[in-house]
Length: 257
Image 1 (spheres, helix red, strand yellow):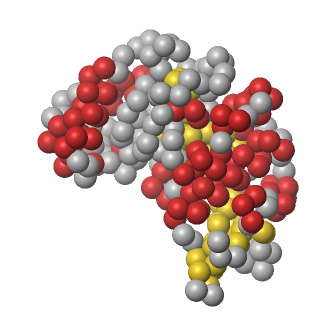
Image 2 (tube, one colour):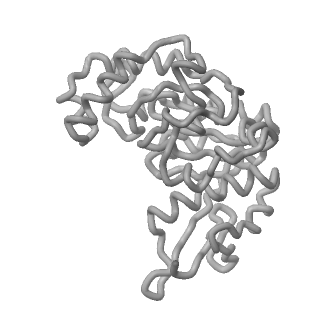
């Protein structure tokens, strides 16, 4: 299996990484091209484009200006340890063993508006550029057009190299739209996480994001390679629901917290 997850808006570059191992992103030429475009934006442009505060816009304009190659362990951090959101709370990568990191490096990928497709230990410098951003470039009017089918090709190549038979989509809708699903050479499985609220099972965003991270953690720590093994996922109180599931979607439910 190859798992894909979304990145996070929040970043942690203060906590020292728990490993000295790192790799380099494969799509740095594309990232450099995007940074060049981002450097033409004013703080007001960024604030309007991303619907963020003036303070955050100023921070990100400064990030674009300071972004530089080559990446080193002094000026960048491993992606899986730099992202700091709900998915990554569930993943808890800082507690991984060396064997876990090796498995994650092979079987987990992070979709990114700036970097395209990241391995967990790929170094990255801080940024904010969500996949849904309508940033106009020479390749199109938004980031989906910028990336085209290049992320899809990279996923297909990775799966072929790894011998992965299924793509497990643990990403948000916004990010998974960057994958041209009809061009993926293998079956795609999407786990769905529902929590009981007022007597009904519903997808609650905060819980679902954390559950996606927990699912990735479950796969990595148990070194799972078969789709059927996902049905055993029980972290956080979730249970597989056979009645609600299909070949393309595995549904996991949990009673009220």
